[in-house]
Image 1 (cartoon, rainbow, N blue to C red):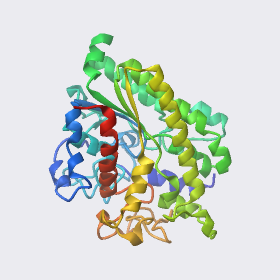
Image 2: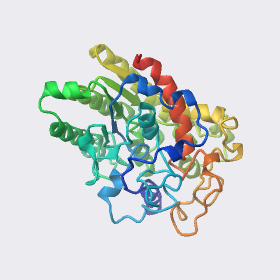
Image 3: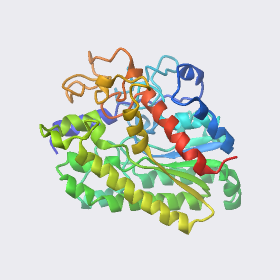
Length: 386
């Protein structure tokens, strides 16, 4: 992999900081929401905790704990949601989907597991996600000639942390089952790093597609493992449409118009997301048969993202900037590996709420909010809540 390309990916994924986020939710809810009916709808499910596994789309500060020397924990990240005038530890200008899930469930926002100042003992949930985490173990990636670019943490490591945490709050297996029966488990979104590391390290997309069964098997094993911990309600989100994200649109740009779909997204990269999601849905069906007493739901992030593209104007997004980063510089997509979001004198759009993409890879708070609204509305009937 070329050094410049590696730097581009590592730098973008590293743009997070680490401060805990437990209070002051109200200011972020003062603007219009995508669906007011879903703001508190998960409260009807009686969830008293949420446990999150995943990557940078759901990391609330674990990565920066691993790399405290990083300079990326600074504004403008977190500018739409600040605690003590500091960024919040999320790879966005504000809140993430998992935050809106917590708000809807009426519970505090999740502490990152690695934060020594966290309040995990209160039993309201923990976030184990780490930006850049892979679903596959490092030795399996190594066999495929792929190296992690950001963190050595994998999904298996996150599951080990989860096991350690439950051992600290449960007296017995029966006690853990009782404590976790009212918890929501989010297993993912994860897998994008596996694929993108491969693409950035010279693998053809056909070769990366061959990784899909192994990646999905790793996610399936993770779901099986959280069931053994006592999980009874589990949501397993699929991947976003890779071909719609500015970082990939910029890197794999082509003059062939047939390479793009009606949303100006790259079809071939989206086909990778679709393949992953189809395999994941099949795996979930098998797990449901094997675990009839457990609710396991596929979370369609792909469809939710396409929903905001389809309804961008009515949702308040700028139709001219759907594929352009709010924070960044250069080119058709507002993304330049030499002038990344967070670097000196890199421009920021006047109103992030009008943009879907924040920095080229991660989304804006408003985009996450709209997606969460659609996502919650979709999964709620499947959770069989009162």
